[in-house]
Length: 420
Image 1 (cartoon, rainbow, N blue to C red):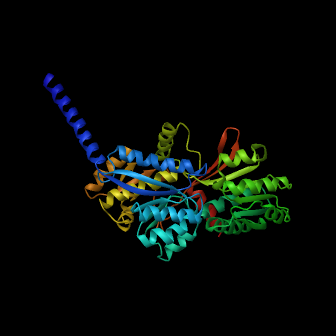
Image 2: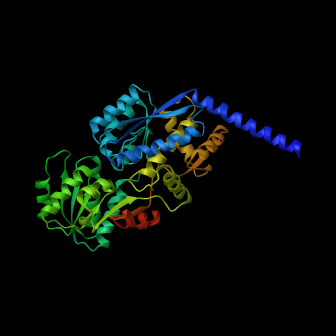
């Protein structure tokens, strides 16, 4: 018995020393990745913090290819020019081969076309949904360097139309942000509403930075819609809705996930949002998604209710797994080529945490593939770098942002098919 106990103690000490040696080796080198995210806005900060959470877990597991990961974060301010400048600095000065971001499609697109593609850097976005990326990829113009963990605008547009039909609205006016994302979703939701026999009384674009949106709101009011659909970000959304309500517009509102924001609710006022329903993509009702909620809540002492949080976590983890699979010193193209290996349904399932990453290292080092079980479920990309997702309908309440209805992926796909 004594000999066995001593043997076990020796093994434990050996394992501990091995872990210390590994940690020391990991800390001896650092690999940078870039992140361009809107940290100057309230809903952008948690997205960035969630990406860092994933990085921290990987570093605690020993890092990528034996090196600790440093996520160099730059603020886009939801501004295309600022975003492009930030991305250029990360690529040219910091030498990153992987770029996380951006959030808005209107920022992600110019970064992709003018920075990451020319530099051969893999770009993984958590939250850009414009179908323009799908078209670009289908034409072979993204060179396999573009991925996103957020479903296309088509899902939210269809769900917005579904909400209007379920509420019995006969007419809807659309406000959309005048950028790639807003133009895309505005066009899609208009088509979906009309496919359901709902009149679109007007479709009005809003530009950034205007001192007032009274002229645009007055234009939309002329059609006397029963409800309005808002594909806006909080800054212009707050201003436009205040103008709308002050001029007597309806409180029946349908909003995209970009307005899933405490800032929007607080500045408009909950008393005016009782008839507001929002849409968002959702994580499937899967064990991996539930596990993420538990870990996130333990880390941040609140549930991940904001937009894009699970997507940000998965974008970061998958990018780091692909870096591990590609090996030390791999180019952006070589890293991008490994995304399929770490999201392979035929591979070994791994959890979305440090333990899962450590397990993936072992499988990948022996030449195997892994199947990442993420915060948004079992992530799989199609040939255009797109993913599919379920959806939720949510509302603003005294208790915060509250889910009202969950719509499974099969139900989403069936409803979208019915609109064609």
